[in-house]
Image (tube, rainbow, N blue to C red; front, side):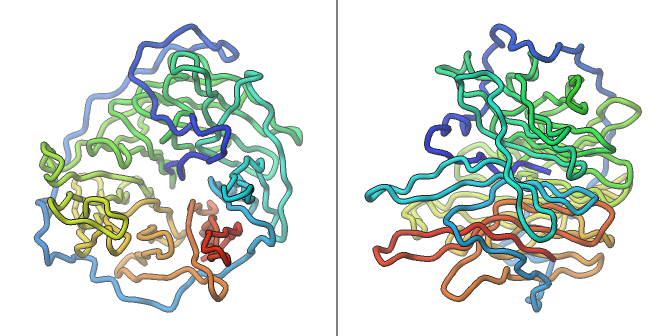
Amino acid sequence: MRAAGCLLTVALLAGCTPAPAAPAPKKAASTPAATPSATLAPLAAGSENCELPGETADDLKAADARTAWRSLWVDEDRGSLGLLAAASDGSLWSTYTRERKQGRALVLEDGGVRRWDGSGWDTFEIPPARPPHPQTGTAIAAASADRAWMFGVLNGASPEDTAGYTATFENGAWHSEPLAEPAARSVGWARTAAQAVEGEAWAVNGRAAVSGTGQRWRQHTLPAAASALGHGDGALWAVSGADLEPAAMRRQDGAWRQITTPAFPRAGEVWEPRTTLTDVVVIGPDDVWAVGGVSWLVEGEYDDDNEPLEKGHPLALHWDGTTWTCHWGPATSTLGRMIRFSQAEPDGRGGLWVVGRDDLLWHLDGRRWTRHPLPAPPGTEPRIASLAWRPGSREVYAAGSVTSRGADSSEISHAALWRA
């Protein structure tokens, strides 16, 4: 899946900088560079119903439902959960950010990596890969309570001095190291996605990918840029992510192969419609969903934050082995805090969960769509940071926070965990 976003800390804000396109500088050579792997010729695919939808279009026709989600845990201390990975043994791995007031300022601090055993959390610190450079985690994957991986960025004084790193949890502790060039120029930077696949980790960002267990990382070249991963039933897919032109690809015969996506109109001016694919769910080799949406800015109109109003339609794009079929959701806008689908995960029974807003999830059970709000304590609002499916089960988890307002109207957050 795609990363939930940068882990925010006061000292580590540089980790939210997108990966540059500049040539790679000197190696950060803890892991030996590998020869990038070849890619296969693209596979041409048909498409249906993929013209831009009209204002009244709504193929999903989702109904509000009694929520299938329940609260598992809310922290007493101030803070929030960020990245989330679920392993088949039921363990969860998440990043944690502490929150505290310092005068009138809100200070956010790295609270380490936490492991959930079903009833409580253990906290671990990831040692710096290149002291004294600070580092930020951007994507996490987990195979079990005993093996997990973090990908992130080592923040240097300049882009040339900044590089991706990887950390591996084994033998009860984390150890970290810089990634080798050329993957270090993109993997670990903002918008990296990671996934545990058959006992090893995969991570992608842009045209670069790495795979391995932590002893040695193999490097791969993708046929198109990607920042989201999905794995299921032996198949591994990647899609372009929220900030790039639509693209989809799958791992096949030891190489990556692009699957051509529908010929969505390409945006020119900022006000023209732009289609993006934000995440991918693999139910089977010939049963894949890519989600995202089409959006555009409305000239002369503004939302509640006095930003240009953005409108759109969420999109659920289905692959049946030969053809993509577009299913468009209803018209939305930033006034309603939704313009496209974001993160998505399988539900373990042939359907999927998709984040529509940070407090509302959409569910496809294979036949119909429903909408499910997240529960929260009275006087608070839930906020999803990450979504994760426990492989081999029907359990899906959401991590984030519940927020309220203090006496001075400042926002107060408490880390929270939910399960469907």
